[in-house]
Length: 95
Ligand SMILES: [Zn+2]
Image (cartoon, rainbow, N blue to C red; front, side, top):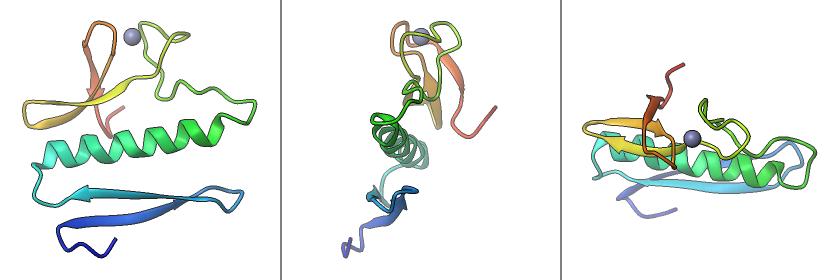
């Protein structure tokens, strides 16, 4: 994006449309991880909106039909959490 304070890239869909992703380099690692996960999740969900696919990725194990997990920061780690009860489900990038 031309700002040396940010790392950025483009994510491309199979239909050729693209979406930019950027993260502030001075942010703590956990915040950068959560910010990237949030932007990838938003892109993945928007990419699926017009297709016959699920839009709740990653799926909340406690509420699989209701909502996706939310990228968040827990201490010094990027985590996927349930947006209803804020329980930590898994580290971002974990299984
Ligand atoms: Zn949930």
